[in-house]
Length: 94
Image (cartoon, rainbow, N blue to C red; front, side, top):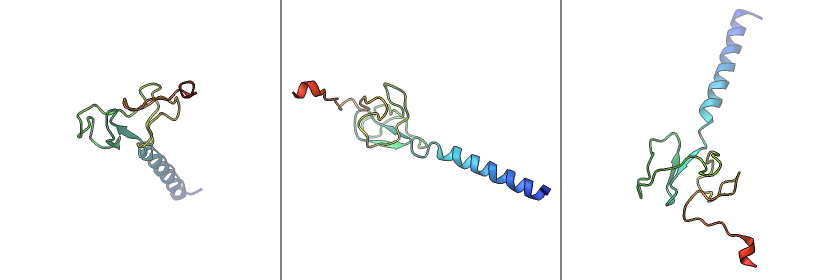
């Protein structure tokens, strides 16, 4: 392997690594637990510009990152993200 091809391979490996790191937060969000506002974690917002509530980027129950800003419940533990969402107990329906 020539020095040039080794350098090119190292460059490609580093580029792929950097791309993976930069994509890591691409689909993670901060949401307002009180209203429907959301933003990407890379944005500057820490508080909701609509109602002033501190934004969350992880499930308050299990700590899993929020990867869908339209979800009302955590996909891992099933607990609600927002305070106005209530879990319905199937026993109550019967």
